[in-house]
Image (cartoon, rainbow, N blue to C red):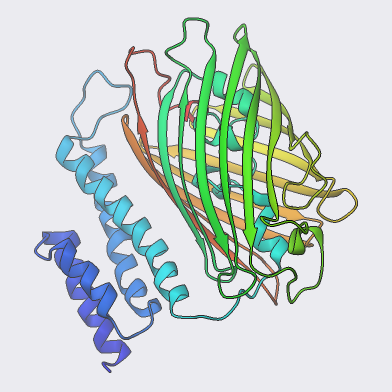
Length: 408
């Protein structure tokens, strides 16, 4: 087995060749990932300085780009490709490292089922990076999962694919979503989304399919309401977990343990630079922690390239009595291309504080984004990472600019 230091030197050489001179093929790089006999931490430590330097060089080139009709000095196609590749490969390297490291272990999850299942929510990089606080500002595809009213709060036609992983929870999630608020002459907005998730395949082995379709209608330019129908099917091998019996851990007694249609309803109002949101999830009251009935209130603020939001959520089902989540986060949009996010979440049910970070490269026609959250507890802490690729379609020329934090 090669030493860690020798492996690091190989990774540095190959990383510099790829990012600086592009003499190493992507296939060769992937094969080295696959065939490496050392842990992923050493290669990642070697590659990340390369990614960071690539971004720094990209920023300098952006500043020197020539003027055009765009609002901010644009990036040429070649430079956009360089920056886009650095963003995508850097994010994929980080998340890929999590995947490969986790696959090396066949142990059951080390977190509680409540942590791993996380109310059955489907994560997105922007929401995760902002601590989950995106119910007021989250238009685009995130609105299908968070607040359906927001589908009508911006003129967009967006498509997104996501992949998420948590090594401690042995969780994986893959999903696709589309939102259209452009093509209807009545300004009626609609969206479709589907996701498959699994936690703890070597333990309780729970998997679920989440399919949603929703509509939203604006009333003027400042108020919108929306609703989503959600079909949720959950299967689980074990009936109980090492952490004991609870609605979230054991579910119901049928097989599949849950298979039903629920409803989410939301409303959003804007006043100047502020947005206010109210959302109810699973309002058919299934009375199970697998589809908990929750209520959310949020307030967001957008000014220029800065977005801030604070949300509060009540979970009426999972713990047998109402428990609160407090979420807050911010986003900074840089050079008309780059999003930097940070957030914090406190869950009174699990009594866990969880900081989060996120980054994104936002092109006028596509984006690649990454969000990571980590629990601040000594035992059973969870790290969750999610990456997405989005495409912004503009068939009418009226799509809201993605350089506006309220437009993506």
